[in-house]
Structure formats: C-alpha cells, structure tokens
Image (cartoon, one colour):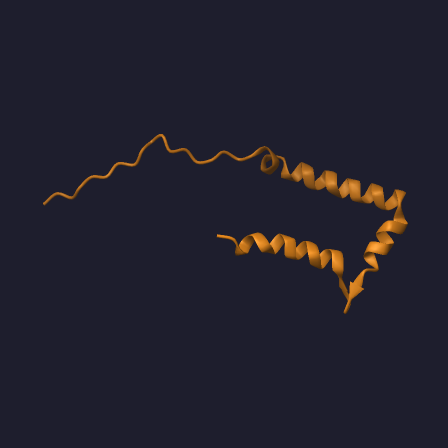
Length: 75
C-alpha cells in the first residue's frame, strides 16, 4: 500500500527581517542617548513626567506598558 505524496511548493519564502528589526539595537541605543540628552537639557519636563503618579504607579510608564501589551490580544 502506498501513501499519497504531497509536495510543498519551494517558491514559498519566509518573510525577510525588516529594516527596523534589523537595526533594533541601534534604535534602542539612540533612544537611550536622546533621553539622557533631553533629560540634561530640559530636566523640569522630565521631573514633571516622573511626578505623575497614582498609588505609587508612574502613569506614563503604566500607559506605555499597556500600549506594549495590547497587540498581544489581537489575532
């Protein structure tokens, strides 16, 4: 008894890594550098952002964490 043979098309290619993903480490270091530089140039703004808390939870950080989590709920 022989089993049917199925072939997988060889033209199907995995998507290549994008420009942003390829240079993610560079983007992270650039954003860290920009944050440090801006914190030195205009510290009052960042002190005000850091003071935005409810129940000892920093609101901007909490908001950004939710923005990061929301795409995991999409199918």
